[in-house]
Length: 353
Image (cartoon, rainbow, N blue to C red):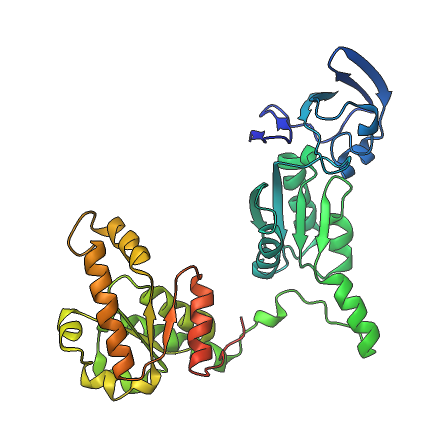
């Protein structure tokens, strides 16, 4: 895997050695310098970290150690180099969802850096841990990869916290503090929070089945059972939000597209008007709707900006007429929109994932 970064360094595909030789030669423009570097220090702190005071600012340097050839550009932010790309691994004794979500939430704060991500779930034994570490070192050993972990077993943590990686265990330190505060020992069982009981599983399955059976205006006669009825013009994002509400929150969600007859008459079908207290309207800007429709039916009347403006205006008047709350989905993820819908109707998550 080739890694090339603007202002960072380049590792060639032939770069597969996982250890650095103790003796390294550094060449700065015309003046060669030879010095001895500690391999553990190099791997833990990034190529030539802490030694840049001897080099000229903004000049590319080449670090050669064994089979490794790395090009570095110095950052203007002090002496610390800025990486233009980083390998990232999410480790877990269960699904890895928590480690990945937390890692992504932190890494998105560094938009100038490109992250190459991989998730390694279900690390439950020492053999699993050693295998995961070997995979990381083989692929990214010289790049000081970032590793986010939710593993709670101290023995596995000890195996994984190698000097060649930047290891962030997001649970262990908090568990230690909680143990001290609560005066008892934690279970340290990975995935325990995701173990569903029979009732929770039944609720989730029922919500998913209901969502599938009542997608896109199907079987409106059953809307009395719905906990949420999402309304909106075509391509306003109703289906993905319904699916999220069902699969992630255990909420029975139906969705209904406002078709031309509804829009022109400014009326909702009886099955919806009867259950309008469960209804939420989804809307967006005409430009966003036009962009989405263009992908499906390019340059059609259906996708035209004029049609989008008209339909959204008609839908808005229907929502106002029936006193239906409206969520503007522009710029929001599916998760954020679904959360707003649940909050609007005061619905609580029924399952714990």
